[in-house]
Length: 77
Length: 350
Image 1 (tube, each protein chain N blue to C red):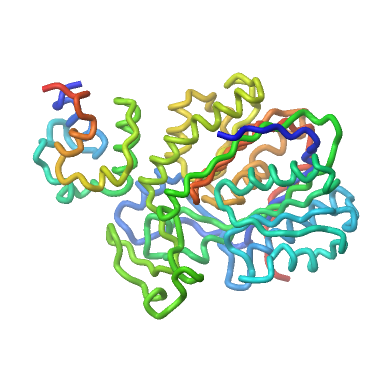
Image 2 (tube, rainbow over the protein chains, first blue to last red; image 1 turned 180 degrees about the horizontal axis):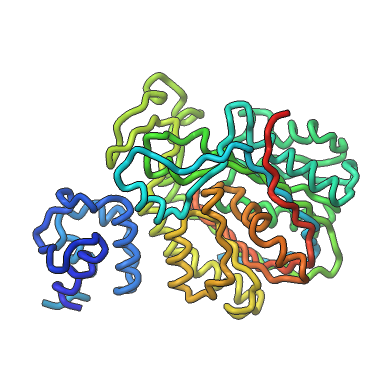
């Protein structure tokens, strides 16, 4: 999966228009990034990448690219 | 994970009671619809101040004892599973023993477990029956979590309901074995807890004060804190393996159980587990819509509300899975043969 596709999954999760999110978007500034979205993101990581990430690691993320870094080398581009 | 089989336990009957007052999920927040879609909860039954968990369990117990025709002096063991007891001491099981008029030869004790508590209760009942320590067991399981929830904390305010249940179990030689899987991860204790008000952090003005918390929520340290994302993460980590272990122990394929009854945590979580494990969705029983998450009572309440017709038709294979606060988890692969399942009682003080 490319980073752009990853951003697309996040856009879908947050009910954004496609292509809205960029890697440097600050999570705290996204109105729909709440605890329900975090739960949806945990499911997204599980479903698409087969990884289980503790919620505390997600809470430490500041930007969208910090979220992308959680799946490490599973993203290209 | 520890896996064990108990083969002297017959589930004779079950009853459940909820407070009469039914409360629709309403709130002055902009995204309530999203919350309801996620939890699956549209209404709950909420206990008034003068109704305790023990009252609901006592009503359920009286009903099932009467309908089964069990003499009260034939009950050898009363187990009360709750996190909302009447007293710090004595054990509420002892108080219930007195109220129900059980015999002095009947043992009684409390167990402090929540989401996993019903399955642990079945395991303890089954072990006593198998050991010959009891011939008849009354397993009373319930909670009134609404009493410890802050109405200004949206992570919990729209989720929980109250209920008390009674399950009657008796010794039967040569019963189909019940296969249990149990486990605990105490590292998760802080993610679902009431932090203060007991001995570790005694009650003070500070612990009783309502304070601003994460995400605009407000609660005191004597009210329930739930870290939803952490709980979800724990569930994905532990629950699929637990259910597979129980199926393997029972030599059941995934399509063989007549019903899967999960602790009714919330709709999103159960739907995701079903999808991820590729479980047959029509075998998964959901009763969140009208009752909410009733903590330890959710599995038996779901059976009473949603499975009585199926269970009356003939023998059935059930997978009952509890998981949550602790973290604690337990599953049983249980075969039942037409237990008496009472309709849900709506309880009010007369």
